[in-house]
Length: 257
DNA sequence: ATGCCAGGGTCCCCCTGA
Image (cartoon, rainbow, N blue to C red; front, side, top):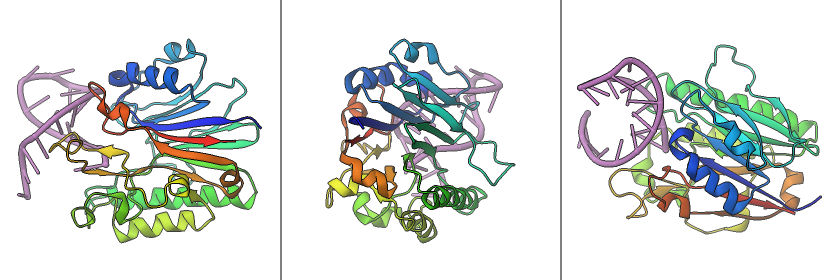
């Protein structure tokens, strides 16, 4: 199988970031781009199809929303719903298939404040994701999960573990659910290639977080065992976070061979 | 505990984000 480049990026509104998305598509020419937080029902598919991409979008009014762009027109939508909660109407999940590999794009719930229904919703969503991944592992289907996980995996992934203690992105219950997922045999692609690196994928717009490098690493690629064998690089491209009127996240890039 | 910033929508204030 040929080399592939896959990118995940929370764009914080496709309407506000259309030019930035187009720039990432032309500069990186990824085979697959997964984006999160479309933030609105409108999705300008035509402008990205003009760049040679097939688009799969699951938008939602005002909040959430995810999309996948694929260069290969053979890419097929598997589902845009994470199973096992019919009452869940939030657009946070897309699964596509290409050449026998499943590419899953997630916008995992933030979960704050933790004393509201938002936190149990996050934990339940993580249980559902675990069950979904478990089935794929059991069926020996090669897959990867990319996206905004809203999980800070470890102390090294944030500028101040103390500042994040108690937060929905860092709580023990969140870590336990994340660990259950990786215990299926999934690997954090960034950590495979950057064992001790302190790099972030999100910097708040407020308090000069970018200038002070007060960031967190919450955008990830988790790889199934077969995909670990194919991975050749994984890195974070900080440049788009420094563009004019940027998203508060920056892209994470995975290369397969 | 709150605002700090940014985007969307109910649209000049309020909600959400992380």
